[in-house]
Image (cartoon, rainbow, N blue to C red):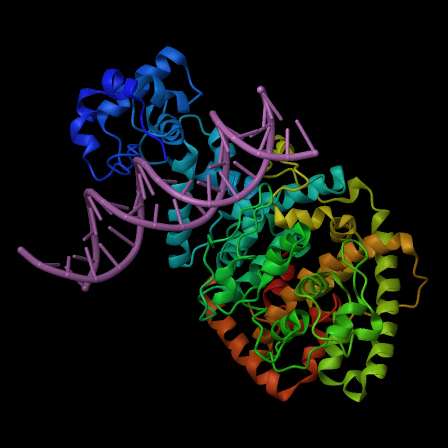
Length: 554
DNA sequence: AATACGACCAACCGCCTGCTA
DNA sequence: GTAGCAGGCGGTTGGTCGTAT
């Protein structure tokens, strides 16, 4: 505890701050702490302005010493920055500013200060307040958080930067595209598709995890789940790696999957990209996040058997500890970190799926392990091959993404390897991802997926090489969202047996059916569940109603 | 007219980073 | 190397105001 110096009290303390304010309850303590809180008075403002004019900005703690202003340095700085400094632009944001903010947010995420730097006269606090309000408003209205052009632009930028910069070179697509209400995002996607049919040819080539992630995320929105997924959840802030939704104690409290155990930023980003909280909602009987999420995502419920054996089989080499194979089936549930990461990165889901219905898992652990190992091997081979093939693509193969590249250069400024752009973070770590979207792999995965011609990916026997592992894993990362997305829509299509155009207006209803179907499949254990895992199996015709149509439109 | 609700906004809080002794 | 400090940043809170019921 400290006191204002006698000098301040006797000499510098403004008259209007002396007696009355010192007795004001807003002051912390009547005898020891006299720093004031609460709204600033005009007199205080005048004092602060006068001080800054004389001494300049900075050294805010000295303000109190020199002026007797009963405010802490932080408060002085904030007051100056947000209200007193010159050239501040007050009033509502203009339409242009709002659009720019949306674009900036898509690129930067909740980097209010950086966003404010691009908006002269606007403060970070102002932008933040505006955005938070906007989120609430649009979520409530069921509107896309980002304008369609922003979504497409972000995707295209991520594509371009990925091809130009390789790993971590194109961290442009902001995670919040994923963070925000998935309903909003996929709504935005479809709105964009509706409103921008001129560029619809791009739609089928959406390899961006954000697209899938957000669409998937729709499933965890309050509209679809009883559990509310706050747009700005409480969580421990990680600089340049903000991880909303995940890592929040609230999440656990809400019954959402405890992603807080995920330590790895990349994993966080991936997890966020898929908006898995609600989907990963672990039932009391389910310890395995992958199994659980799988169950939900592929139309099965949490009652499906734990399948973390498969998860561990697919443990990526990039960032996860090796696991003891011998403990897969007998050890306690694996750490959530592994489970979640595996869920997102491992190709094993294929085997996992099958284990859910007709997999050898049912016949015993050993059989399951053998089967899954086999599946893993074949899937790796296949993926490596795909990645290898796709890696030969040339930049010229990419589609024209010049449209809507208003801020292309700015995106370069945010090529932060640890930026919050979860979506592109995934892409960054998946060099094959974008390449795949631009080449034959794209045709095989994305196009076929969107056209519903891939009931199941055929893994050819090819030599698995260590050097291809990264690409494979990356590719799998890409396919994971693909799979997730497909799985999300799986039962949407199965609801009526036909591909259907899913609009923003009908999404909620359909998703509601989806969950209903989830529960149904959970108990019935249909074979469909086994088709969800894996990037090939995700793309059954009925699984991708909306995107199939998008493909048609393209 | 009273109340409830939501939007908006200012300010605070806690954490992090960078600098310096 | 590290502890302390200042400043910055993002999340959250609480108050005020306008609008709907």
